[in-house]
Image (cartoon, rainbow, N blue to C red; front, side, top):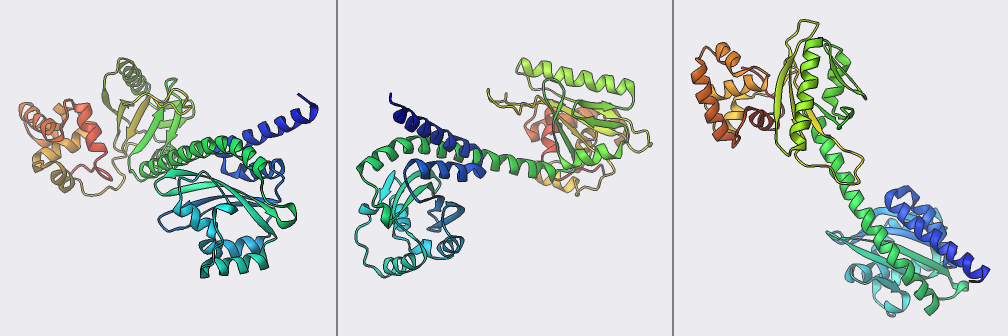
Length: 383
């Protein structure tokens, strides 16, 4: 290979690499566009997304070597008149689109757009690669050349087709990552809305996630201390029990058994004890995931205000008031025998009501019952 051929190949590889890097970090699209613009002998380039439902450009738009006022005018209304945009929306499966595919275009919208383009934009020719990402979303890259540089010819198109194979894969990766990020943000938001403290530990008992309620609980420094290294209780015997619960949950998880354990943690302030529930994650993490939670701890502050629970549980699971009162005490960390004494019923009656709770919540153990109840509403209060 000649030195010139090697340089060209190296530039192509660097451009391809920049496309994949941009797929992982949206902020790097300007870098990828710069390299692509130089590689193809273009004067400008854009990265864009189209929303088929509204038939407009998505807010996602990155441009290289375009005047800011021209970009603002384009996004402010001209994009909807752009014949290329209209063609792309009508042909979502078209991989590569260039000027010759559009035809003369003598309709009013095209003439209005071309008049604006002639006054505001220096480039004349365009070569576009797009991908249909599903759910009405299209995305791609457009190369732009000034009139003096001439049209994109057959050699340009051949080179662009090679680049487009990698662009298509990069866009698919970017779409999946963006969707996963949106799902994670939604999950974190829902967890932050939970009045219970939620703490996730990895297999080394290190904290990998805390919701806002957990951060507030830790800030109280009232019997529970949470750090990146893990969670500790102020009373040694209770801390030993908690560590034992965590170990038991991990052991059960390795054997693919679902286990939920409950205990109470005393508070030096003398306030009501925290009920703590520990359970293993139901699904193993993906092979390459660096986020690998193994144990979920849910901790309630009995003094934290919560919504009305008895009517909530009765409506959701058709519980009787007596069954709902027992359920709430079990969620608060009480044993079945202690709950029976507090409610003034026999242990046998409590066992009978627990059996009914299992049936109505489609659970088979006290741990599973508590898991369901802790996720059924904004908060549970003993009544």
